[in-house]
Image (cartoon, rainbow, N blue to C red):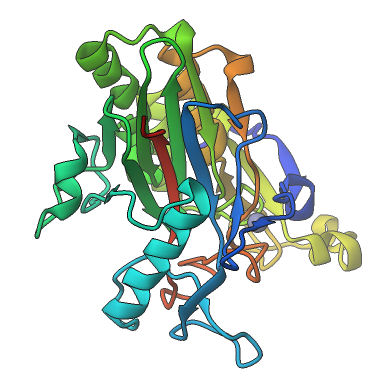
Length: 315
Ligand SMILES: [Zn+2]
């Protein structure tokens, strides 16, 4: 049996939902989310949505094409490659800007790259990618997991990280900031960070074992969890919460345990020395906003991938 403290805060799922702002639509039709306040002369950055693109693999019938950016089993490579060029063009103004992706596997490995790595037949296996070379874009692919972008304003270096619950547990983002310090001499006080769209605490129900693992790894572990009631249950069946005689945990209307991976990664950035005010939460729940985002959970595994990208502008 896993231990769970009696007093976790409770909430209705709709109270925990963070909506994304309206995407910017590029001239080529790509809908993407810039980071507020990051319109800087030396930096490219942004988060993709489903909007735009030529992919038909996950589309509704009334949509022309979508921006799946992952080489998934259900989509064709040409469509995904075309979509990648469209996103790169939307963010950098030039479809030929090199784009470096990695083969993600829920680790805490971080790889330092150059533009040459965009040509690799087999991408590096890692969940974080960093560089201080200008003129290339780094990417993290997600469809519920949390994408995190980091930029060093003084030393001019950038990183993109992929943090699902396993990667978050393994401290991918803390590790990523550590590697930036080591490789580039980055000082945490010079770093800015942006946490992109992912599955929100509104939707991310997990098992007791996830709670136990976070509790064992982080002093603030329990603060990342809420007991969540389905909003409809709260509204229509509220009295039943008090009338049910089933044993705790066996009631059909018992709350479920939800983890906040966005907060978990915000805490890791702060633990690594990044100032709280330097961390932007872009918002958007991948499962609550299915028109805007792919959600692995929300579509039971049949989902495309979004991309978080960052780079130092070319000279
Ligand atoms: Zn949600």
